[in-house]
Image (cartoon, rainbow, N blue to C red):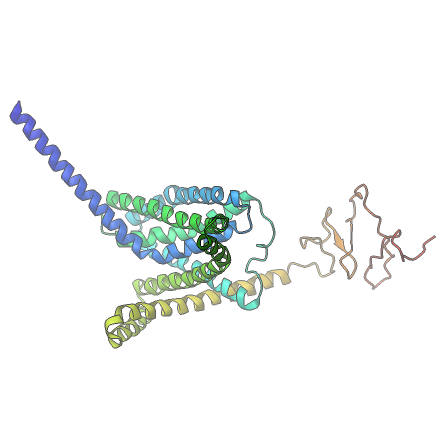
Length: 378
């Protein structure tokens, strides 16, 4: 019995050592895979705080938590199953799919650059108040793209592992990246509150630091916005650069690699950093070029759709739908409106007197009949 027990304990010890070694291997592989996705992580951490700007302070952390939970659902319920199945049965599709995501990042980055240069909002509606559900759903949609980039980049680093090893490694990466990104986001969005609390302290030094923190936060958020845009262009451009090389077109990647090696060899002790910066700059330029091309293409396409969407008579509803009942029709040059045919006037609304249209002329809305200075119609 004692010999059998000793053998059993020895087997358990061997299994424990093997399990510990496997955990170490998974941890090391996860760290390596996650490091490759650092650029997208920076972008994710830089983009997310924008979704809680302008909200009540007590709602910021709950919204960040909801976005983080949505990010975990994205990773474990959508992204992981899809990329693991593709890597097992259709590995050739991973690179094209990754390039599609890279092109999307380039488009997002270039759109932000264009919006800044043109002095208008890239989406046109960010200044409008939105409910929490809309904010969270928008943030989770953006996270889906960025999380997919993180997971696919990580998968490329462990492609030679077995299926179950890949699953374990990517699960660890998913959890660590989510905690890292949204932990940092939570700290960022609460820094101004921390500054206000410190500013109420009794120590002059603490008060000064708190006030400085409050003043610095708008600049920090602006810096993160710029950093996020650069990260989008850099990560997206690098994905495309590597992707076209893997698909068989080598000149572009070789050119950038040659520039990187030349910068590395010419700068001695700091060659590694300089070489990386050259590669990053080249990737960002490529990302900007590709993104700008997509923005221009979409602008032309949308412009053509709008040009063919009118009815040719100038009478359109509030959503551009000609003659649709239930919409308001613009009549005057100053934005006056009248109910569409078939609509009843709401109680308490002023009646608007409208002249009969002369053939060939547009109808013009006059001022309300009870407004001072309106023409006498009695």
